[in-house]
Image (cartoon, rainbow, N blue to C red; front, side, top):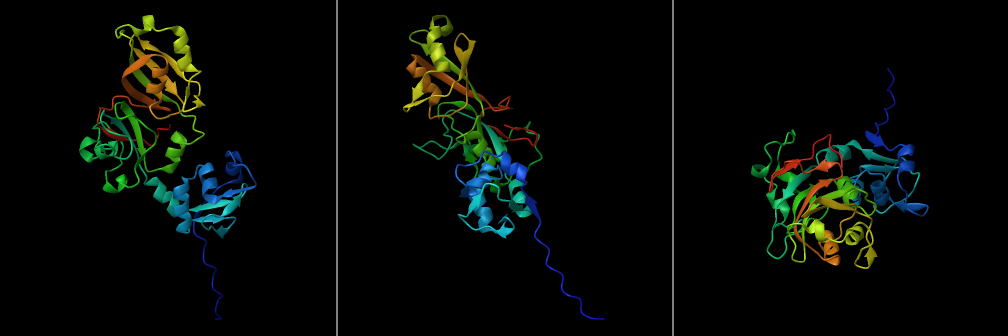
Length: 280
């Protein structure tokens, strides 16, 4: 029996990005863009993650292996190996109710970062995720947004660059909701009664920080001593600085919602996993 010609080696399994997906993403200006930036625009991963995948040989462009720093056309066909998908599925996003005295990111001035609280003994007993705790979940776990050292409430820590870009990217439109206790001059019991309506209107629209006008916000009275802020941006100490400009002093600040995810009954200093059905 004559020898049979060898069969061609099968192509590695990959997930193909359809042309419709590429067209629907907000494109960068110009006819080409760096591959890692285009992958982030398409919502595949973060730029850093894209570089890692490219280095591992997990990305193909128009059928050819991708190279680091490669420029690609906006209609280029980008394929991602299943190994990248599997790696991404193992990434965690954690919600923590940050206490006063912890910083959001790197340790500073002797204060610890909130990530040190992400330990099995601090996991909320009502967290119903099937995810099992492991120390590898701390690797690359970073805050997706700020929360001041003297503020409490919902803080998102994530390994997933897609989540971070969605929450804090330049084009992010995700709402953040805060409850803010204030005083006005000597008044602390019924600030609403004495605070001028025109200054409340300024908090909604008309203020600037760092030489840039702020996006419109929703600001309303929750009760006579507390305001409800809904913002779509997060400049450093933004709410406190906004209040200072209209004569208010913030005595307490709590973030209660990011997008469609609420703080709920999560106790201060405890954490839970983002559930698979939850979306910001």
